[in-house]
Length: 148
Image (cartoon, rainbow, N blue to C red; front, side):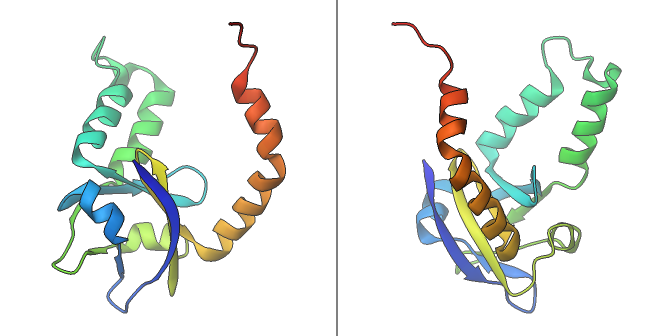
């Protein structure tokens, strides 16, 4: 399971080092793609296959007929990139993705169970402030009305 929050610097070649803990679980090749909100998503190849199947709606194999699905698939797949970790655990963040979330010198790297998110530090701080205030309400909403 990918968990934890880390702050790492981005070098002059757009590389960022993934936490050792994540490297062990993710493998040598990963997929980096635009995320929801103001972040990037990183998936293992195995997890990306699961996401791809869900997004393609493999039951009918006609996902291209739905406008919303076409648009979202363009968003997720169009800028996705397979990247390799180098010998010291760094990945190269493509310019188009780096620019999308305005990454500069530092990246916040967050493990979110089945994926890793990369955030611009300022955007992460604002987002974190918001969900900390709403955590109780979110938990209540997600918990629903469960009956034993």
